[in-house]
Length: 310
Ligand code: FAQ
Image 1 (cartoon, helix red, strand yellow):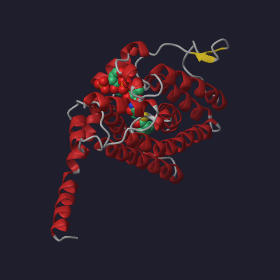
Image 2 (image 1 turned 45 degrees about the horizontal axis):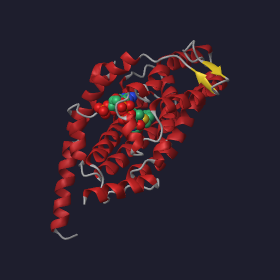
Image 3 (image 1 turned 90 degrees about the vertical axis):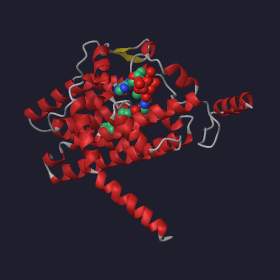
Image 4 (image 1 turned 60 degrees about the horizontal axis):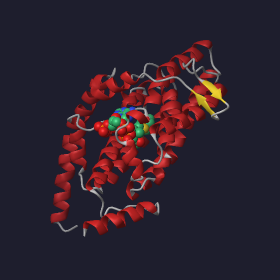
């Protein structure tokens, strides 16, 4: 009966073991996972746009090859995550429709424009850096297919972060103009990167329950702190200034203190009012419509081959 199923479910969580697709799970656990994994998948797919815009304008063949590979990896991450989500009984088509109708979200960070090639480096360094901080603990999430997808994704994200850092380091060794481009880019991306971790714990409706279920292993504020602690020494090595006058080492806490992000800005961007929300969604809708013939052809081919018994 139900009580026994709940006990078994909680015992699995208590052992820090994985819940697998065929295990019984509470409906709210399943719904929370669909929400988070889908949002994560959509972020990877929409996240191809800001950097993708620079593929045709990469400054050298080497930079172009690197950027192409990175953007392709993001498509791959989206696909593993959609597959993980499908194990919870929703189809890829449903998820796509939920994104296109605005009923599911994607990360706020991808609603900011990429104004110079330095942004490709900054996204790798800060955005992928934040993604790694958030995703490494998710390798230990309680739902098996999500945790396993995260392991491979994290390996690729570390490479993405390194390529961004290397790009910025190269520009820092260049001309004054290039150094100014790097600083201007870091100034724009710093605060939005901190917002990727979500609202403060005191204003996060989902954190407590997601932690209790082992879906999240750390709170939004814990991960944000970890990101700041990891990034400040990297900024020093790079020779850039992070645009926060309150940033300072706190020996007593053993962490960096930092200023308060503009939470009204995060709320606005999440609710559709960021600088590029309309553009990102319009692009995604157009790509979906342009791909209709591929989906039709693939479906027709699959039907024919199964008729042939092949
Ligand atoms: N943007 O109660 P919480 C990448 C929503 S990395 C938009 O704290 P939760 C790699 C939240 O969904 C980016 N929405 O929620 C890459 C909820 O709304 P809902 C993707 C946000 O779930 C790099 C509401 O606010 N990574 O793509 C944001 O416990 C470069 C209340 O918030 C992931 O998705 C936000 N920043 O914690 C790709 C990681 N923050 O759904 C290309 C997995 C909050 O109830 C290029 N996700 N919201 O309507 C998570 O860890 C969590 O879902 C959080 C939010 C931490 C994002």
